[in-house]
Image (cartoon, rainbow, N blue to C red; front, side):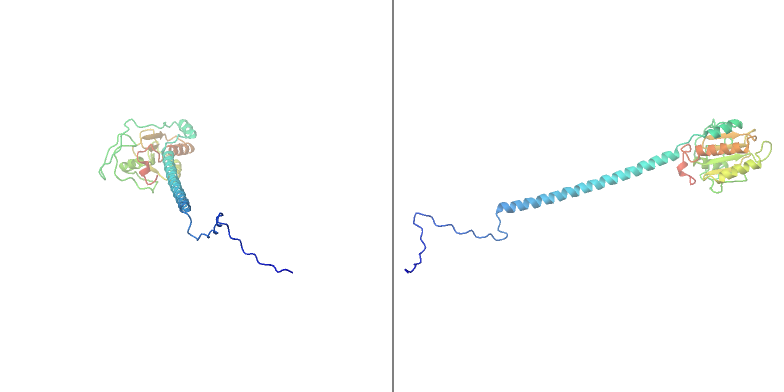
Length: 255
């Protein structure tokens, strides 16, 4: 058999271009400048997005803090005004006062304003009992709430300025309040946080019981019954104790 000869590879003719060499694999980090710019832009966008998120979070925290503070302020304002506003006298107390021939609640005609005397200075009031006017720099301490002897009126008026209610009664003589009714008033005074009960020797004729707040006065004769006196006392306290009727009701320790 004839032997096979190896064919030599054909050389390209001079008219044909030589084959292009195979591309060399790129090394890591040897990307084009456009790729590097793209990576930098993506990083910049990520940083910008993070910055915007942080700003939004800070704004939300600030707005939340302002809202909480605003709600607290509004709540305090509402509470103080709700507590300070005088309340209407309950109808049951009004009916009891009419049935007992008591006076309505009134402001004394003189209606003097407040102001401090020198400590211990004496002073004569126009109205009896006094419901306002110049007074001692120190109010009466509370407790005690019930006194069996007359109290210094200049100190007592200071208590009224601080929002207290003081119940006065005629202790002896014609038209005196009975002990049973005094006992009822004692229970009411001891059960109220800023109320004082004390005898008063200068009550006008025909008055055995007087309820006082700052510039407010209601009086009753000795014929008032115990249940009537209780209703009237509780109604007066509900209406005027620690309210804006008194100019310094929030300064009093009892309020």
